[in-house]
Length: 142
Ligand code: DAT
Ligand code: MG
Image 1 (cartoon, rainbow, N blue to C red):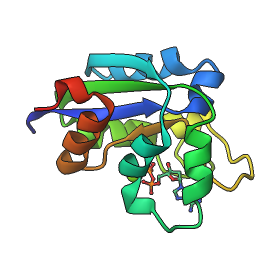
Image 2 (cartoon, rainbow, N blue to C red):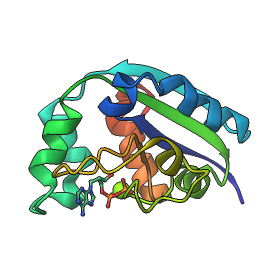
Image 3 (cartoon, helix red, strand yellow):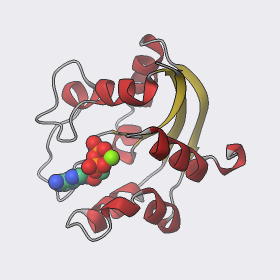
Image 4 (cartoon, rainbow, N blue to C red):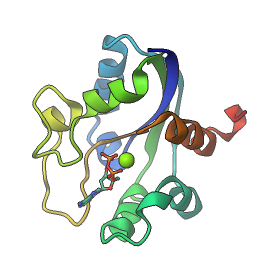
């Protein structure tokens, strides 16, 4: 497995609940490196690009509204197999279904809202990672 980078976002619920440090701790404890960390306020334009694949789905509007509800911690994590590896650390999309031991399984729950407020985003492929890192850290784009 080659060394690669992934985009992690600590979503507004994670920042609000004071879980940024705990989430970064888990990334580092796994042996991944933090290549960039920046607290950012998303914009509708940025989120439209970030979540383009979900446009038209029933949770799309609440998802964008949620992601605009407070700052997010944008992180580039680096390491062998980090794209799949961080998805494993994060756990299943639905925090109620996510396995104990994962970020979503240990720290998240289903709040009965229109959108899963599941603490973190992680890129799902090398193509997504390159695209998303370029969106959130345009100064580092190739
Ligand atoms: P993931 O974040 O696990 O990659 P995704 O890319 O399918 O999941 O969806 C992006 C986000 O949208 C997800 O983190 C939470 C929200 N979401 C996805 N499916 C949902 C659903 N069925 N109901 C409510 N929110 C959902
Ligand atoms: Mg996704």
